[in-house]
Image 1 (cartoon, helix red, strand yellow):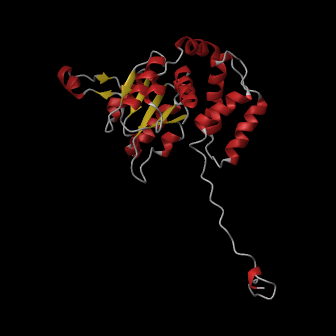
Image 2 (cartoon, helix red, strand yellow):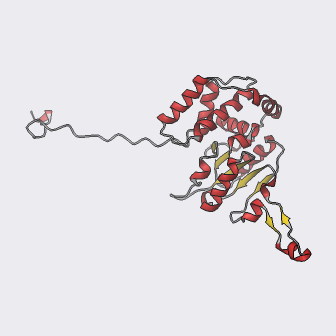
Image 3 (cartoon, helix red, strand yellow):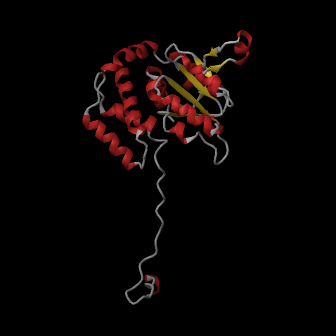
Length: 257
């Protein structure tokens, strides 16, 4: 992943994290990853950033009855959950996320009040972020091969703030909507969310450039952030043997004639 793509991903997330759903970050624990997360926090909206425990309970997420307080005063006492206020959620070891937790987090993302940074540390075949989350996390970043210095290069905060203000006015030409839907079909991407997330990223990039109309270059950059990881792999063409002669015999090699 190039540094330009990395900066675009940071900017899109920072402009409207809830609309883009979140970010799938493939990287092992390292100074590079921490530097990226620090940069993301510095340019994101002023929201709480909450790290989720892998075994977090429903009561901790959604709130519930506080048993100790209820018994103490002999009337129901409810405690709030982490999701009672807008926040950016960090999911460590996302490749090992329990399917039940993944389903609940997917439901949370559908409400468009929260975003998730899924830390994917997968090292073995078969490990990976649950599909329910991948479908809703608009951005993908792979830090493998990136220099530590390039991650530390600053993002222009004033430009991010201006883009947030301009974003509601940004429109997408119908022609480009058709193009992104066609591109998803050609890449065998069956998710209905994929084109929506791509257009969301394109609008953010247009706003970052100070424009109220999305251009093709915005869409190209957005596709690199949102579609590359979703595309179905193409099968390598297999070399087929020449068809048999009409009489059923195999054709002779020209060198033997």
